[in-house]
Length: 164
Image 1 (cartoon, helix red, strand yellow):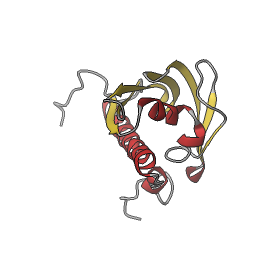
Image 2 (image 1 turned 90 degrees about the vertical axis):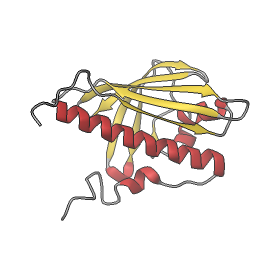
Image 3 (image 1 turned 60 degrees about the horizontal axis):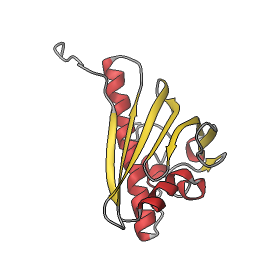
């Protein structure tokens, strides 16, 4: 194990095709009336560049301060928020796939810590954003609220695989 060396800092990265027009998919991340149906439970307002908001996950008793940096309608969202080790950057990109589909990619970067910690943060973030996109897909394509984010940790924000 002593020969494991990181050549660059890990980054969380995931993406998914959503079979809905790009404007509808983009709006789902901007408007908390939609976002609260598949990701966080409460927001102090919509995303607007330069206007901070607070997102809450009431089931976990957690929240984060979000600083929207870039909002390019139907193309890109960039925010800073409270990541696992301090402020990190999250970027969404939206790519039109014909008239009625959108590919959404999400990347998070900027953590600090040991190689083990960085690997854990990137893995957990990738997993979380994958659940988020799957929830969005079910909501927009089928009108179903799957509660994936809440159900990931049914006993609170701890690893359910640990023996108790």
